[in-house]
Amino acid sequence: MPGVNLIRFLQQLNNAPVEIELKKGQVVSGQVSHVDGNMNVHMTEAKVVVKGKDPITVEKITVRGATVRHIVLPPDLKYDSMLAQAEAATTKRQGAPGGKAKRN
Image (cartoon, rainbow, N blue to C red; front, side, top):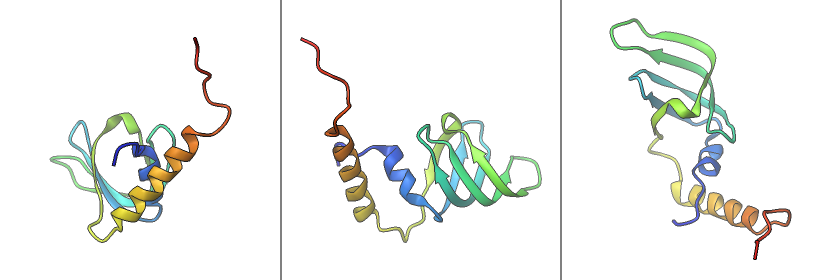
């Protein structure tokens, strides 16, 4: 869907179990508690796996958005409705007053 903001879509993943692969190869899996405007993913009950080392379990962790290679979403999510909501939120925000004025 054109016009869908990725961050708005990810912000709907509250309490969803995800697996995040980082650019350096580590894998963080856990439950999303929040995704902020910089695509930083805040998680709870997470497991961090570094190649060649034992997995580490942490109660809370924040994954910096710039370090994310990809996010594996759970197969049972209702993607269609989430995409529609993200598109509606993006469209609503783009049409909101207070945005950048057009210059002539």
